Image (tube, rainbow, N blue to C red; front, side, top):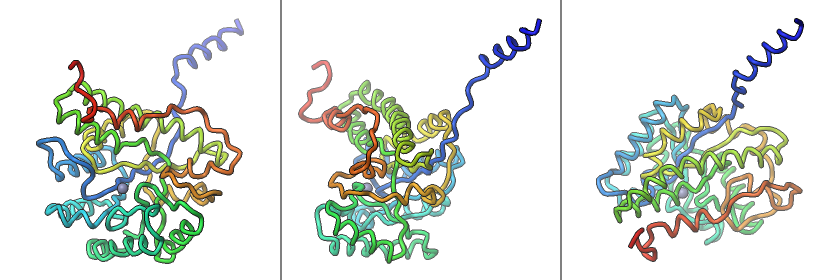
Length: 311
Ligand SMILES: [Zn+2]
């Protein structure tokens, strides 16, 4: 008879799902007030409103939006979008004036592009919360002297660096999605909507494994998104899917307080990449195998050189 309690316990354990891990993550959005092209019938203001509605529905803490001031010159509603972002309780950060690539110019020229963005940000938010910086293209400098000159100057100017851990190439999905809708390929557009969420779940799983190897523990994550058409369409689904994986939302400064973000890159990299990948060169870490070629596949999808399906 002594066996019964054991069996009962085993049966209960079999019915109880394993507890979810707690994954801490901050959401961030790049290229405000506008990213990429839009499908017909969708406005820039609708894109921002859809994003803000998803943030509210999921009770996200304040979400940093990184600004390129040059975009306001061609977008009459640009300043309204930035003010709307702030009014909804979300801070703005600096993403350079013209989305300048540190790999394509001297550190001095690049830093003057950073400074050119500051009067706009100061005018919109005199509190100084905008002293948060995101590198365009995630290019942190292609050679060591330039990389360290840029980073130390940013720190002297009072910036925190908004590093990224989760980058699932959302921008490439956005571009392909708009192209597929423009050519009326609804099946391809639907496939992209599904693929977008799956790619973000896969990248989280992969990066969790990689960062555990690098840091020896679970780190707080920073997700990179853009203010694009498909991002706006999928934001609510993505947040729901991440919550089902055990994600708990934190703000960016809390995420960056994780000592993981103090880890030093041992070699400068020409390629733009999220921090876990930048930390790999020179370290004895063996990342798990990962499928390659997603960016190239998305680049081809519904492109001019690719004829529509079935024709
Ligand atoms: Zn950007």
